[in-house]
Amino acid sequence: MTPVTRQEVLGLYHKIFRIAKKWQSASGQLEETIKEKQYIICEAKTLFQKNKNLTDPELIKQCIEECKARVEIGLHYRIPYPRPIHLPPMGLAHPQGRAFRNQEKLRKLSKPVYLKSYDEIS
Image (cartoon, rainbow, N blue to C red):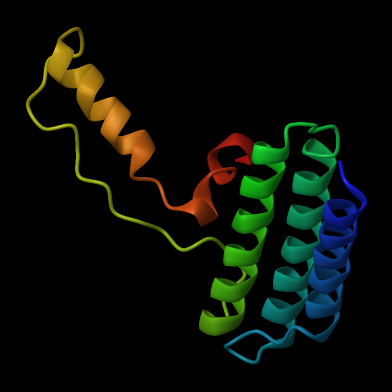
C-alpha cells in the first residue's frame, strides 16, 4: 500500500468515527441514536479489519470507493444501514440452464458499489 493510499484509508477510518460520535438518528429517539452509533462503529471495525491485509491496488481502490459511497449515502439519507435495492427475481430460468447462469452473472454485476461487502459480512 502506498503512503498516499494508507493516509486516505486512515482518513476515512477517522472520518467514520467522527461521524459516529456526532450521529443523531432521523427519529430523534435516544435508543435509536445509540443503536445506530453502535452499528456504524461495529460495521467500520469489521470491514476495515477484514480488508486490512489487501495488497492489490485495484481492490483497495474499490474498497475506498465503497466506503466513500456508504458514508455519503448515510449522511444524505440519515440512515447508517445500507440502502436496499430491488433486483428482479430469477424469472423462469431453470437452475441448471445457461439462462440461469447468465441471470446470476447479471445480478452480481448490477449490485451497487455501496453493497459489495454487505453480503459478505451479514
